[in-house]
Length: 130
Image (tube, rainbow, N blue to C red; front, side, top):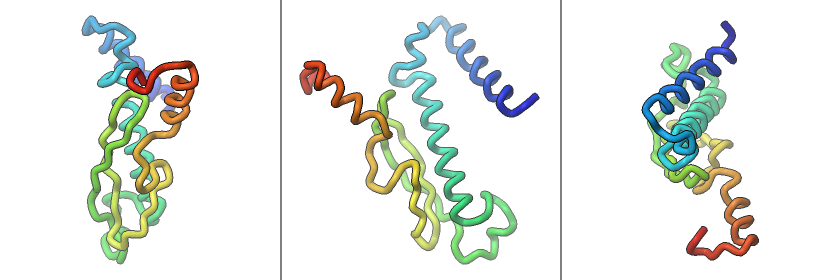
């Protein structure tokens, strides 16, 4: 079985489990739903991959044991997304020169949220409703 099929099967299983619990399909997209958790996991995996590329070795590899610049834990960051607030762990390195691309430093919103807010305002929704 290919990796793509495994991921699809896992996603199908998660959705089936959600619906088997008697929850409405709309809840998949609402705050606290499956889409929010998938977004969090995807962004977190991308951040880890960026750190692997930056350092030149994967996490827990022997090659990193003697390197000057190594992983140095995580810093907490809360991002606003279409599904609500997402709390991430941004990886750090000892030299302090890691610059994540998917979630830049000082970024507080995931891409796409600003355009939705502007579109709702343009349609006549009040700031309070948005």
